[in-house]
Image 1 (tube, rainbow, N blue to C red):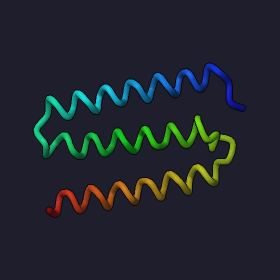
Image 2 (cartoon, rainbow, N blue to C red):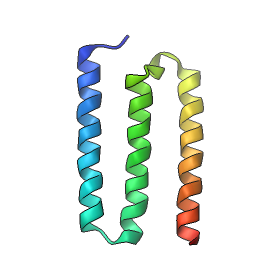
Image 3 (cartoon, rainbow, N blue to C red):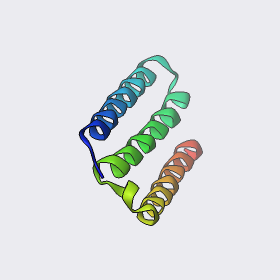
Length: 83
């Protein structure tokens, strides 16, 4: 069950992760910043799926989306590191 407190907490986490991503993009070398920002994007996607789409109440769907997103991000990271 979604509550106002859960949505507020999710929103605050998304804002915080966005600020960390912005700081990474300005303060770290690109070879370190790119994987860090990709990881932060994965965390943000999981928060959105869990809290805003309420997949916490459907664990099998949540695991499926988490696995798909993780494989997609691993593929992107692999392509980035290979290039």
